[in-house]
Image 1 (tube, rainbow, N blue to C red):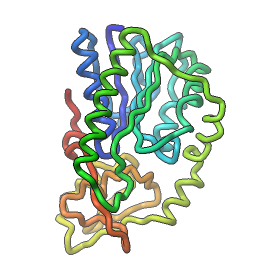
Image 2: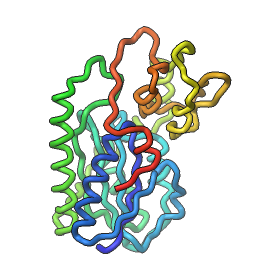
Image 3: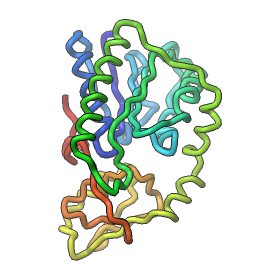
Amino acid sequence: MREVDFYFFSGTGNTLLVVKEMTKVFKERGIQVTLHRLEKMNPLEVNLNRVIGLAFPVAVQGTYPFIWRFIESLPEADNTEVFIVDTLAYQSGGVEGVIKHILTRKGYRPIAFREIIMPSNLLPRRINAEKNKGKIRKGLEEARRYATDILEGRGRWRDDPVSILISKISRSEKTWKLFRRMISFKVDTDKCSNCKLCIQLCPMGNISWNKYPVFDDKCVFCMRCISMCPTRAIHVPGKKIERYHAVTPMELLNPTV
């Protein structure tokens, strides 16, 4: 392994922290790493001559629809190595086996898969800052171990036929439509500062502008807009929530190591 292209999506920063920690380990071993914001990339343009890393959050026991589309749209390969890391608060079940199946069928060689526990960003009612710091510390320690395992050939990636069934939940548009009926984001126009940061952050192009942010019907609840709104103008009516993010908005938009 000499060169790694690391394609990642991070909702409110957990995944980016893990990616940066793994990248540090790779670079310490002399590996060249290039970071790519997955939501901005064309899967048909991946470099099949480099090791491919994929990183993303778990959502609805799988992941977001645009990440499924990216993976499913990757070009045919001839034994290109791939590793995956995902971040989650609890459990998945619909990621590991199904993605291994997709990649193997396309001619990739899956070399390692790891899930790393990080703090939840899904509309938390309270945030225990000390507990979250502990989770992040342990998560980054695990990220370093995982990167080392990859470099030393100890990576594992299980076959899991059950995950193919579980993945159908997050891959179905019906699931996301149900969420959109249950949860809707609104804007407090008295608090909105007209910074338009939410538009820059949204991976779905779901937010437009008409004096204030206007939400379309493509939200996948990555929590970027509501968690990072500087004036807390974006909210869920009737719900009192805290905002969690592990990095700043600019770190998400312009990631560096």
